[in-house]
Length: 318
Image (cartoon, rainbow, N blue to C red):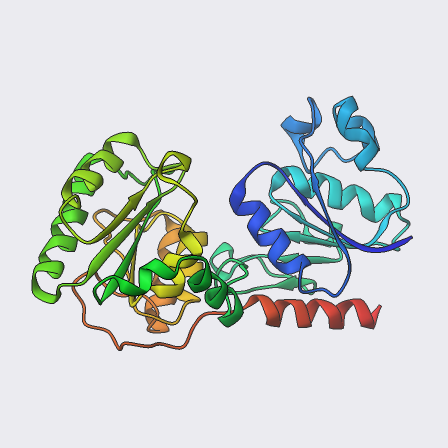
C-alpha cells in the first residue's frame, strides 16, 4: 500500500478539475492517472469490472499497477470502472471515491460524491450542491497576480463565461444574439468592461457573434491559445460580476464560488437535473437573471473543503 492519492479521470477537463480539486485537499501526495478503457470495458463501464489492467490499452497498463494507493478519487464513468476495481484489487485497503452518479449501486465504492440534483441517496453518499472545484481566496489571489493588467480595466469588470449546447439544451446563434443584447444594454447603463471566455464546447458561430458584438467594448474575448494564455483565473479573480451560460454545472459552481453576483440567461426550458440545480442556486440567492440588481458581494459557494473534511472522517472511521 502506497501512502498517496490517485486522481483517476478521462480526458474531460471538467472531470479532471473535480477529481484533482478534492485530491489536493486530502493531505497525501497526488498522482493523476489519465485512463481510457478499451472495448468492451469502455462500452459497459462501470458495470463490467473484471480484468484489472487488461481493461486498458497496453501503454496505459503500467500506471494501474501495485502498489495500490491508500486513496483513489475518480470522476466520470470511465474512472468509475477503475475506482470500483481498486476496491477489490486492494482487498479493501484503498478507500475508493467516485465523483458523480456512477449509475449503479453506490455500495460498490467506499464513498460516492454526487450533487443534490442527481437525487442519489445512500449511507456512503455525500451530496454537495454543486461541483467540486479549487476556487477559494488563495486561488482568486493567484488569478489576480497572474493577470495584473485587468486591474486597469474600467469597473464594473464583467466576466462572461460561454459554454455550449448539450442534450436537451440549445446554445446557438439566436441565443448568442439574445445574450449580447443583454450585455450591451447593461454596459450602456453602467459602463465598465466585458471579459468573455469561450470553452472548447462553444460553437464557432456563437463565438463569432460575441466577438463582433464586443469589439468596441473595453475588455477581451478569449477563444483559445491563439488569443494567448487562458486568463480564466484572472477573470474570476478580478470580476465584479459574472454572466454564465446556463449549460454547465461546473462553470456555474465555480462562478458562484467567487463571491460576486452571478447571472445567467435562460432562453428555453432546462433539462430536469439542470433545472433543479438552477433552482437550488436561486433559492440560495446565488444566481440571478441577467438584468437583476444583486448585492455587490454574496456568500460564496465553496464546498470542496467541507467534502474533503467529511471524506477524512469517513477514512478515519474505517
